[in-house]
Length: 296
Length: 268
Image (tube, rainbow over all chains, first blue to last red; front, side, top):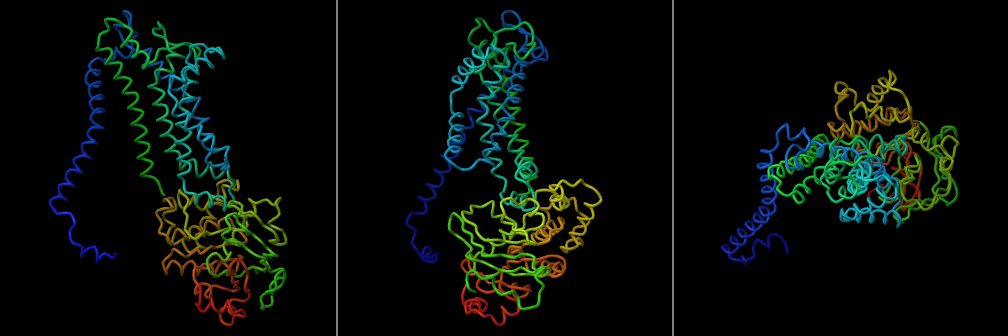
């Protein structure tokens, strides 16, 4: 049927009905969008509005007192920072190396395909399972005890799948023609990866790393088994010391402490949220800057 | 051409030492069975432009990519025969492929400016070779850009991103990038297929100048370009070398019926 035939066809659906269908369709799509966004705005808004009131400089730099019912949350903030750094140190180099292998060197066979399937499945395992695994392997078997190190290593294992898949994806997004040109100019495979592919994929890799760490920062179940203490009178002295951490602290003061002032709960939630949203913002900025600079 | 025999060398009197590349009974097949070469033998003279032409899938690009072993990146299931470059068999598995690729440069159909500045594009190959940045780099940048007829247009913005150049300029940058390595052979696989007529003319003009110093092998994007550029021409059809000789002879008085049909536009 040519366009001319189409034009000659009588209108099968009356104009008024079509307009109605159109308007209803738009309405439903808009409603779906509002339904998705509204809870997020409500949650974030509520926590920030109520939480920011509780956040004073003192709240951020003092220890909790009176059975967690008063004072600040300094040890939880410091603990979460340490856990994030430990997780990054343990997971980023291994994750990026694994992704480089999978994207650039691994042959496409059953073995590498099953590795990929395993990685995807790892990303879907409930965090409490990771927590118990970490408890068994790091805390008990390797005798690291409940510690920052055990927590970081467990969180790193949980974060690895995210880092590996996003890094592999951004490596693969680099046009193959760059690789061919580099090799045709006398480059080795590794020179090509290091000088062309990695720099071009860097923003994507950083985004993946940050998104992975974001998951680790907010994680509660894993640190409950491997790293966290309800209350510590001092900041952790070594990686082998247990630590307080924001998500776990929030869990404890919300469920385990009778007569807990609600302001401190909201304040703690707000600090944790700012942590995570801040990381997210950094990832977004990196991504949009890289996109503006990209030459392909 | 009888299978197994070397095709007749070009009629112009040439010294054997002038043959930069000698292909002997080359057979090649890919795993997907798409393009292949069957029993190809030919001489490529130095300091001249040799044109490989014919319909798509005839094996021209495969032969080109054999000369710098770029076929190693693809799924080649079978190679036999010899390709001699200055008397060294480049199909030898023990060959140093990296230094081969520095001696045999390649320009692709689509201009690929590496995502860096114009200057960095030109020095990239030298840096890969482990050379330290110095006065020699500046010299290489200017000389290669002049040889590729691009110097006048970019000399005042060498540190701009290469992607800011037009398509035609990018392709000349690709040529200059190859020249900066001071290769001996330059392979060009339809280098002007995406370019406007003016850019095409500039590329062709620089090739005509360059041939005094380099061995140039060109897969043209049209028969007209083949006829314009060929000192020597080889006609490929379905993986076989049908006819090889001086350019004028092939386009004016081809010996083989199939060459004649193709040159006169009766097929392909």
